[in-house]
Every structure is written in C-alpha cells, then in structure tokens.
Length: 110
Image (cartoon, rainbow, N blue to C red; front, side, top):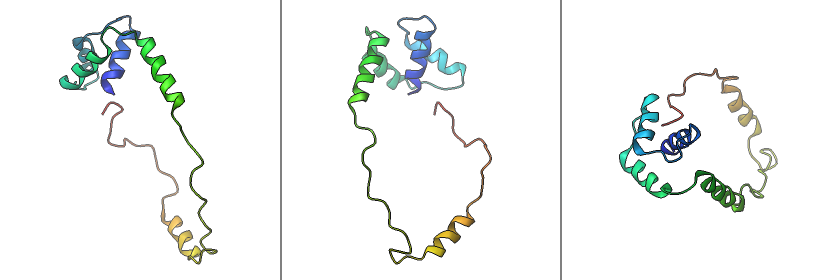
C-alpha cells in the first residue's frame, strides 16, 4: 500500500510515469524503506497504464462488490436467555470511561 500511495503522490506532483527511484525517494523522505520486490511487481503491473483509468476500473469493481448485508440475528437479552445480566453490567463498569489519544505504536505507512 505504501508503494501505491507514493506512486500516486508522484503522479499528483506531475510525474505521469514515476520510476522506482521516484517512489523510493518519496518513501525515504518520510523515513520508510521500500521493498524492492514488491515495488518492482507493482510498477510492472501499472507500466504503460493511465492512473485515472486504473482508479476508475477499481471503483467499478468496488461498486459491484457487496458491502454490508443483512447481518446476523440480533443477540438475545441476557435475562431472557437465562443469562446473568447483572454480571454483564459489572464487566462494563470495569472498562475505562475514556481513553486519551496517544501514539498507538504504529504508523500510517507500516
């Protein structure tokens, strides 16, 4: 995914056909190392193709893919199903009320 993002950034910057070095330069500017094998494979797949046409083809594939659906049956009420409803309420009280926004230990490009 990081290679795709860097490639698209290069295209947005005016480079109609970014090379592997262009993508690597973008990635290294934010401290990310490119995977040469994946990058070569990706560039081989997009070589000679128009980015806008690739995006449109992907968009049409996504629109045909089912997303969502009816889902499963609604869970039964704990007391009605013979469960212990007060125990479930106690478990909820033990959770912290609100978490602060902290670094979660991962990067957008990992």
